[in-house]
Image (cartoon, helix red, strand yellow):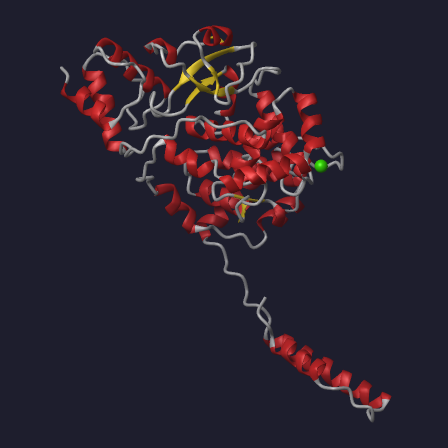
Length: 426
Ligand code: CA
């Protein structure tokens, strides 16, 4: 807060040495004069009136009220939520921003699962060990995955985003960005305020409305948030146990199977013969073990569950088995690399050793190159689900099939050299 002249006056008086000759009445007179001065100054330095919201935005808020009321939001909550709220035009620019910079899975994971974050993960696992254990007992969700999500979503509560959620959602909703999606989220956010879980000013999140330490959208909050510490509020902003329990509840509600790992970072034996179908088909983990696959630290694989193989950068880089629980993590964020980062962060925090293979140094395909690759595969009769310039799991399985049919080792990884070969093929 900027200092007013009244504050400065206060400072000067405080600095002045006390005079031993000053009488009580003199002191009273001095105080009266001082407070009159403060009063006079305060009259002139009142904060400027808040900028009025643009007419379109005010109309949007007015039109929102009947729907909010129908959902059980009181007028008092509604007005408190929108007090002084104006749209944030910078958000609309963000919705237009194209992510032009692509990174390889290796570059992304090296940055995401860095040494500092792993160390913090270990500290947080020790500090919140009792809560994590109890949450795992209640939900069946692996505590290390819960911890990994927390680390990836908000860097263990340190990066929740500083935006007023009502302002963000109202800006995007008034602009009808993605139709009614943000309007529905905004109504849910108002209901959360009505239920008293958080004060409007403390309801902060990222620019697109993902809130608190779990980065829940308001609709997820209403479905999945939990009051674990028992104070009557589902406080994913200020209570770590509430945030952790809410994360685990989200994963449970999305189908996490208790007693099954997410998967494992693995080492393939030297004579391992990868097949195109390995990228798509779930096989019993015991079958992978029979083919000589071990955990990256050399220990045996867990015996329960089914898994499929993922080679984010081909046979030259780290290899992973992933169970259906891995797909549940992708309900938080669909990116395979994100789900791997969550999983690896949890594993590292738990003390598991990484793959002995480093990530290959390679240039990532641009979105345009990936789109060309998808078109080339389709031209040759291969099934491409979506021409979006993003090479996902299905495309990688397709690439492996192409490799297998063309006499190459089907590792499913589109290096620039392989992409050139696929383009040249007829
Ligand atoms: Ca609570």
